[in-house]
Structures are given as structure tokens and as C-alpha cells.
Image 1: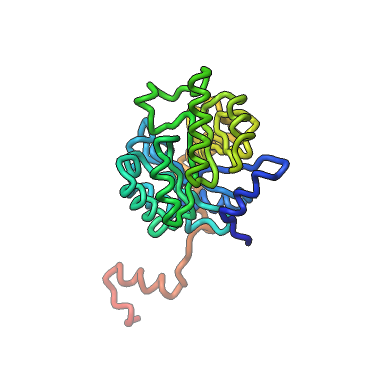
Image 2 (image 1 turned 90 degrees about the vertical axis):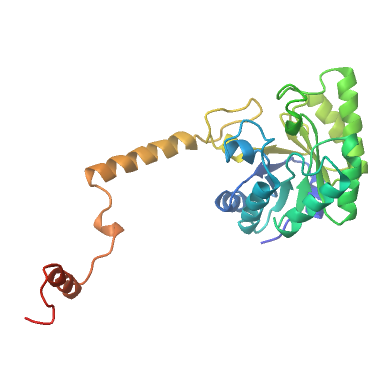
Length: 286
């Protein structure tokens, strides 16, 4: 199986059709996504919400993300695994950013890292890239700025904010990022950024004009109760799983499960020996 590299992802910019990327958070989901031929798997800090039960991505820790990333990497043979750097693992200093990114490569077994932010993150992006670690950028709606943005709101809807995002995207590219996520911005703005940049753009809630699209594993499979506007449920696995668990519960209660095919029998001689011991008799005597 061919291993997807940074060079492979960059070349997708020039393909006539957009490519699909997806998140994964554990060994099994990574195997499934990888087998489907998805070229890029993001271990998103959305794990804080869909795996750990938090209301936002902000509480995810470096240690938690390292554990999840390593599990995904072990389940992936072909796709490029990108680790999402969690809140405050890179914002405070260039040194913290390098240290955290290095941990994702060494301990998390990732092939690249992703961080949020535009022009103000240029020093961190440049420094990480200079250390030999590939960086994916992320501009527009940046979930780690949830409080500053007063929630998950579409960004770039005015001329001023649209121009700011255009400058942010250009700065991220100039800093050395190999690709960039465009989240929660108008489709026309995403189209312009995609046209302006030489690196692949990957959209989520940014319309159809990006070089690629990325979605959350749980969202497209219908594993949760809530489906964001930017996604589509290609399956309803949540309901199917619940129905399966209910059926399991019923069959255990009714004695239909387990059946003889589900367990092992002892030989007659061993059964006889155990029965004799249980009755207090000496199994060696007739």
C-alpha cells in the first residue's frame, strides 16, 4: 500500500476533482477510514467533544491528543496522519509550539501537525517548519477561539473581515504550511483563497470550491444526536447501534444468547471428574 506524503497532498492541488479528508480518533476508526482510501486523516481536537464529552474543543489536553494520535497512527497504513495541536499547546511561545509539535511526531507518530490562526501564528508555523515538521494551517472559524468569537459563528461576512482572512491565509502559506483548512467562511471567499494560494485548501463549512473537504467521522456516520449544517449524515449508525444493543439485551434476558456456537464444551471425561469433585467423591476411586 502506497504511503501518502506531504508531496502527495500538495499534488492534489492540481487534480481536476476535489479530495476527501476525514477525522479519526482511535485505532479502529483509523483502519476503516484508511481502507476507504482517504488520503489524509486529521486527529482533530474535536475529539474533546465527540470522544471525551466536553462542550467545546478547548479542554482537550496535549496528553489526551498524543494518546489518540498514536492510536490512529497505529491503525493507518496509507493515509497521512495530521495531529491537531490543542489549545495552549502552541499559542504562548515559539518554544512551546516546537516542543508540542515535536511530541506529536515522536510520541504521537504523526506525519504532520495542524494549528489554528493566521498572521499572528506565523512565528510558530515558521519555527515548526524549520525544525522539519510539516504544518497544516487553519483560518476562518477557529474553534479554539470559541470565547473570543462568541461561539461558532461564520467568519468573513464583511469586506473588512474577508480581507483579514485573505491576508491570514496568505501569511500561513508564506510561513511554510503545506495546506490550510478553511472553516466556516462564505463560499465565495473560500473560492478566492483557493485561487490565490499554491497550497491545497481543505474546506469545512466553506462551500464547494476548495481543493478538498474534511468532515468529522461521527457526523457523516450519524453517530451523534446533532448534525451541524456543514455536514451530511451518509449513514444513521447511531440508531443502528442502539437497536443492536437493545436486541442483545433482549436475547440475553430471554436466554437466546449465547447459543452453543458461542461457547466451548468440556469433554465427557473432564465433566465427570469435575462432577465427582463437586460431590466430594474421590475421582480416582470407582
